[in-house]
Amino acid sequence: MKSENAKRNAVSENGPATRNPFGVMDVPHPNDDDVTQFARNTAPEESDTDENAKPWGTQDTSYPHGTVEGQWSSRWKGAADPTIPGDAPDKWKQGQGEARTIGDRVYLLFDWDSGKRRGLIDARREGPWRLVGKYINLNNPEITVPWVGLVVSDQRIDGYFAQGRVDFRR
Image (cartoon, rainbow, N blue to C red; front, side, top):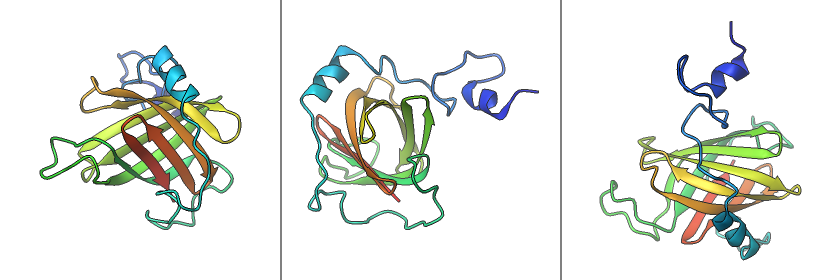
């Protein structure tokens, strides 16, 4: 019998294993030159006036304290999702997310549009507060972008990509 971790890492019994612990499509080249360049030019700082500073997600106090792992509320903006009628780049798309870690990697699987659309972020830790990696749209895998996150606390991750934000709260 496979361990629970092995089951999470397998796409299927006959399919190839993935790097991510969710068993979904991996983010291609999460440490490539585009990611490095974006990270070099993106230095988020904690701020009480940041768009993600005020609580907006589901207030759940049962999350595991002192870690980014577990359930999150997620939201993003910066591009229009053509599958959502009336969407625009400046409108937040909200959903749910989950974070899991393997070594120095943090994987953030999240959804929007009532769970119809999903994305995955594969990021490496650069110190205790900074995450650097890439996002893939799991419904449209041609869409991948570099992403930088600031772990403000175990209740808040401020995330940035070139056109906008992918934030997490709990």
